[in-house]
Image 1 (cartoon, helix red, strand yellow):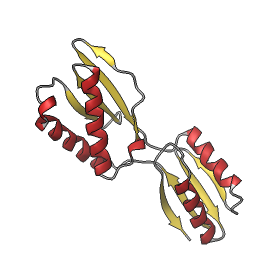
Image 2 (cartoon, rainbow, N blue to C red; image 1 turned 180 degrees about the vertical axis):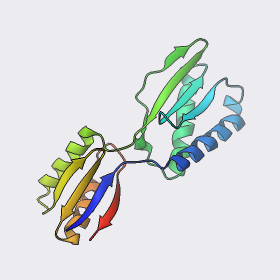
Image 3 (tube, rainbow, N blue to C red; image 1 turned 90 degrees about the horizontal axis):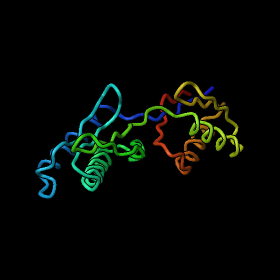
Length: 163
């Protein structure tokens, strides 16, 4: 039986490079040069903290970060910008989560899309990834093409293809 796994992960080294490049841009931009705070990556918690004086500058930091992340080849949907800004004394903090793994809702949506397509494959959720198996390699390739066209709300990678 041929199979592959559907995962959603971000390479930590690439993410760190993107954050470092964003920090350099922050230091050189004229309108943000004297900004207190900055951009900090927490590898253990898998989050990025934006710290600045006001909401307008936080938005500018978001734009810089998103631009640098996309230029490094990371899908922009891997970052969750929905968190609220929290006042921290004279500064404002915003924590951005880096999504890793296929979450349950997206997993259900992916499995439903595969079943609705009537392609002869079996799919099952395994922790934070989805395993798709079939007798034919062509069916697996059809599933990959289907999922590339489908909006799941997360970046997907197709790994461990075995025939």
